[in-house]
Image 1 (tube, rainbow, N blue to C red):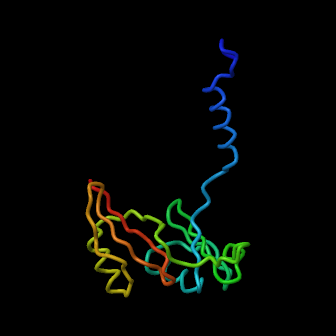
Image 2 (spheres, one colour):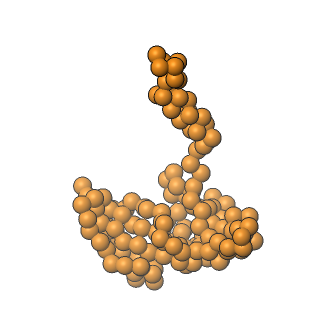
Image 3 (cartoon, rainbow, N blue to C red):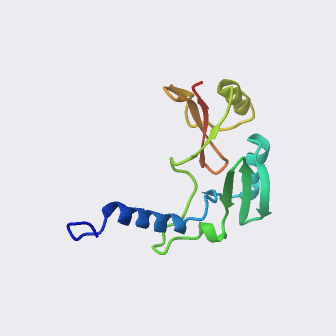
Length: 148
């Protein structure tokens, strides 16, 4: 206790912080909802160069690139079941994975030629250039090239 009879706030915050940190063991990955996991695995591995980690069709798949694990949940997977209030989990939205690339303009042209659907045109800002594309189920992906 300090002179006022109260516990140290800094010590208390440090204790609470370390308790909270111990709950999280590691970053596991990002989960996307998919209507056809096989199609999504093909998209991520053949179009974007991800590595196949697991393929348990039709319900589940996992692909990776670097330290990112992308967990693909199809119909029937535990990670895609309806919420207790009846709300169905579905693909899409605006939260997205961000993949750093080089030579963004040429990558965009190559992906467009292969039939990839883009949500917008390339944008430039103070941190770099980016564009959003969609996987076959409408889940967003951002390709980002940082300013050098």
